[in-house]
Length: 425
Image (cartoon, rainbow, N blue to C red; front, side, top):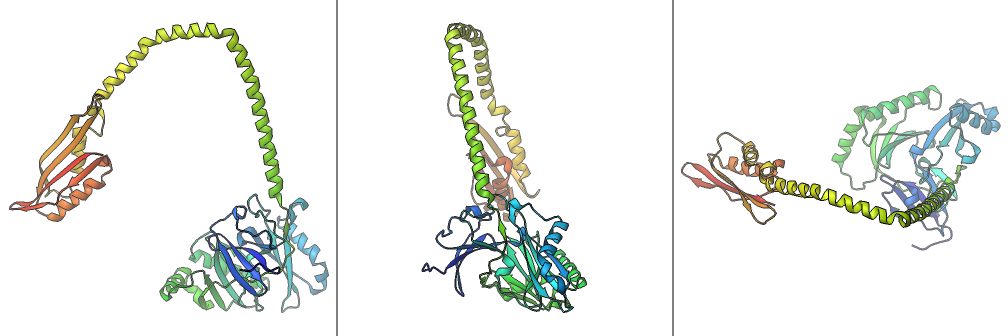
């Protein structure tokens, strides 16, 4: 793709991670679809092109106020007071974290839709500084008087639009599935908007965007059933998620605290390193002086202690040898009784019986290691029981240290005869 001077890179939250789009005039094309949730980790951003970043819905709170038409000129002060009143105001050092837009209501009043951005944490801003910021609901073409649902970072988000297809409310949900609880939350939001006079009628459509362009009709039916039958009142539709549009540059301007935090952390790390090096140098000098003064005394003391401990060490070695010699008996993986018990627990039915079971330990070297082998001969009236018993032996966790080489059961006059063998892995 040519790198035109008019090209703008759009950093937009996608279904599972951040997506990079190239905006060249009215043409928009996908550059990179990542699975990264941290914008700081994205390395594919072209620093030679302007960058516009859209914050996900989960990072923004939607507020709204209605003001008289004659007070529209004082909207800046009224919006700031409202943000402060609900407890979302931040200090000036955090930058400009709210913006608003004004639209007319049928009552003649003015409706202010307010976007309040949470203070960005470290890692939430990319390495390349964006020239402007927006929020994701402003980056897609919306249908008028509709509820629109789509996924950002694996979670569902909602936008409600007015008759002019302008977002008047948006909200994120914690679940990865569309449930009845989400439907109830949407009903509550719509009821509030209608009580405030922001909405004059119920939305006429409920649109669910899917990033999968090959979704089949039966997939839509399952999704429609999962959402809740009540959504059918809105005209439920499942559509392919449209390509984004380049949003207008907003007034959001969060302070880039990443650089300051990184610099402060590096300075702390340097201070810690210098302190540790200084302590180590002092300790090393003290240790060297101590060694020069008491080297001979310590050597003599160590020699006496070594002589005294020789007998104890020899006793420990002998005890260890004895214990290893008894490992064949005391180790639960070698105990013939426990091995036989686990084999019998794998029997699927009482109609299967053992004719002969042989569990053998053969020494292989001087360190008391042994070769463990098991031979089970038996008979059953049902071929399926013999094969089921074979599978049970293979799957039993207590016998996982054994490798079974089981032959297929043989038909005899009295039933199905089987011989199963196992060795230590």
